[in-house]
Length: 278
Image 1 (cartoon, rainbow, N blue to C red):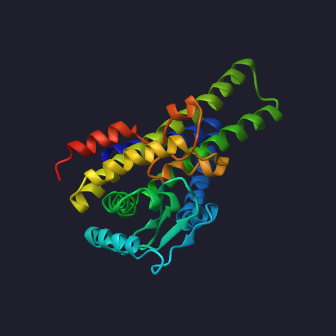
Image 2 (cartoon, one colour; image 1 turned 90 degrees about the vertical axis):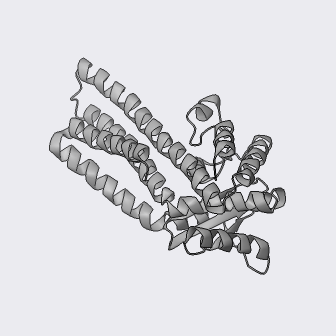
Image 3 (cartoon, helix red, strand yellow; image 1 turned 135 degrees about the vertical axis):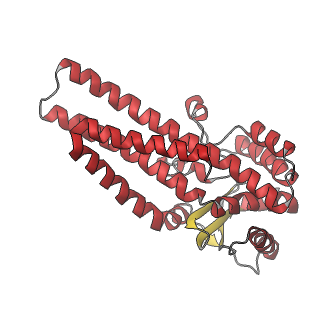
């Protein structure tokens, strides 16, 4: 885990616990900590199954796509991790994602669109990127960040309305609570997205170095970015929450959603890959 990621997660956890303490002292801190632990345990054990179910992913038979399985096996061997199960998402939008808590409990999913669009070297670069997420345990790290940010928003809202129902709010307290309910989730979201962006850049570099080829992934990213602009998905709120899992964000969004992105700019990623000395 990079120093930057540790810093972001530390700030997010500190914010989470600090808000709990401010809202209800030591009891609030303990309650916030317990909620975070419960939600992280659920995410740790079941996030892969939930995401695969959400996208109706089906196992991709090796006889149906021997070349894709061969590439995945080659990259997994280069990274010294087990070859994970391969799933197909029946979407025309070209994309891919990895999920799972560690290299022994992971899965990689590709859409039909990405199989139709990319050539051998580009697909190899994409799969190397996804397996880098598995090797670096990025899915677990991103899940922890997302759970902490989401739980923080819930705690703040519960505390806000709970305080109102008990008529505890003076004018000053009301202003403080309003600022708390607006600023806390915003800061948490920015930290969550910062974690996601840092892990994307690391996965780009790790994958390119593992297969000694950065050009394939750079070319793939350019194609995927153009395709996502032509054919953006209109995801449900729960699906939009999984945007960080994909190699490029597949969902359409407003200017604000693009401003608070889970992914670094494609131009920056391609520039870094092009300059990478393998």
